[in-house]
Image (cartoon, rainbow, N blue to C red; front, side):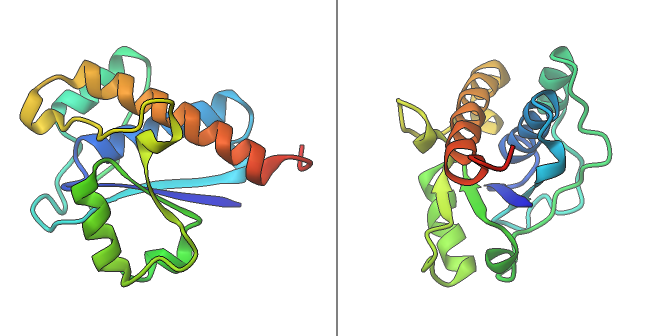
Amino acid sequence: MIKILFICHGNICRSPMAEFVMKDMVEKQGLAGQFYIASAATSMEEIGNPVHYGTRNKLAQVGISTAGKYAVRMERRDYQEYDYIVGMDRWNYKNMLRIAGKDPEKKISLLLDYTDHPRDVADPWYTGDFEKTYEDVAAGCEGLLAYIKKKDLDGQG
């Protein structure tokens, strides 16, 4: 089983969006049984809170539910439990390394590094543009899934 943990600052906007977009993608491709996908925060600010209404609304428009998701924090042990720990921006990346302690297995990356246009995923908490964030997240998830299929799933199907 391939385990992916998406990370953002508060775990209410970008990382849960990536979590549920990726779950939807693997489900539609008949791969859901080969993945465990979750998301978490690098901060404590939103712990226990539900997904931001902007993310919930945007995903609902494309038929994806975030029901039952509440913000949790990344823990040091997550480094051992997950194969891919994927952040939304450079600030998250620094905090992910701090929480993990180090990255000897090169598990920590940024979502849009799996696209042809590596950059930070804009934070809709500040921009208010959940559509743009969704476009970035969808592109990143497509790139990450293609990478995983080539690297980890070839010959398993």
